[in-house]
Length: 368
Image (cartoon, rainbow, N blue to C red; front, side, top):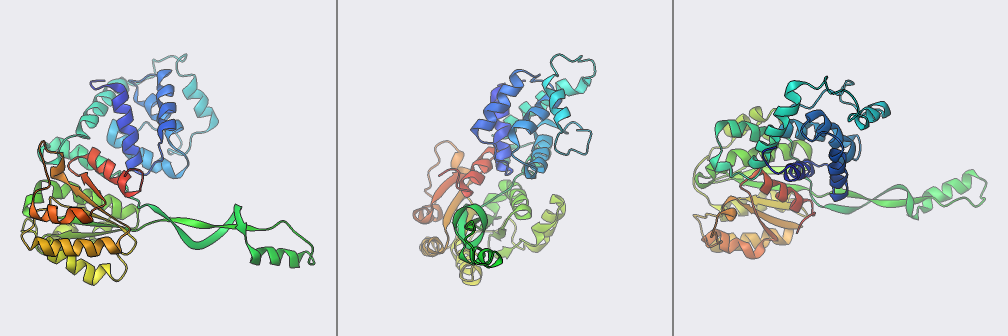
């Protein structure tokens, strides 16, 4: 590979986590150990090693396919509709070193490592400096993302093997057995992800980043409890427009619905409008709210500061993703950014796929 192979593979695992796959450190180590005895430069070996070690269950398989396709190119055909591999397929992968390699396709060994290296470099590139070809690859990578809020314990309970005694079900069982003592029935509270609210700045100063951030929002809105609004000179709810499966159709619908592309920014007024119409009614209450903006404010910074304090009281957590934060020497000196920061729980970057991967981890509570 052109890049450091472990860095490329770890980057692949991070992209999987951003897509919702629970690829923790133990699974990543198992993935690297599997590739140590297989062929690191062969796409099919990387595919099966990752699928058998990084996926925790059937729900992860579709996410794995999307990320693998974006990272290494089209995944090898599993021969059975990409369903979970059977024990015979597992044995085939394990014995691949001793099997003849004449059946390996010529393009399988060369194209995947080069594409993976380019993708790893792309993960750290600023959206504003991408070429047309790089943007097309970026679109495939962003389409695999997902966004889940921190989990919260709900009041609803469900039957479980461990937990507290469920008196109603236990008494019913006793009555069915003529009042004789029975094994107590147990239940426990369910966990549910918090709602995520994205406020995406589409003003003129954010034009180099707006397309990528909206594609990120599209992936989040399709696969989670996510509400999306654009802010500029007006506030526009675009959750319905982003519900299209096709990213291009979704962005075209957003472009038709948003009247203030590349205009100015009135964050304080629009945040007040959001809280008056949506936030107080429950959209922001207890949610993880993410503002994706460079912080340039044409209005009164004092108004923005007051509305940020109001938002902070309503939301579970307030996160600000600023594409300018990664630039050398950057300091949040703009009036709007300086006014908002005291009410921000996490101030993160937002200029590259790697930055959005970290943003997704912060939103789900995996990073501070």
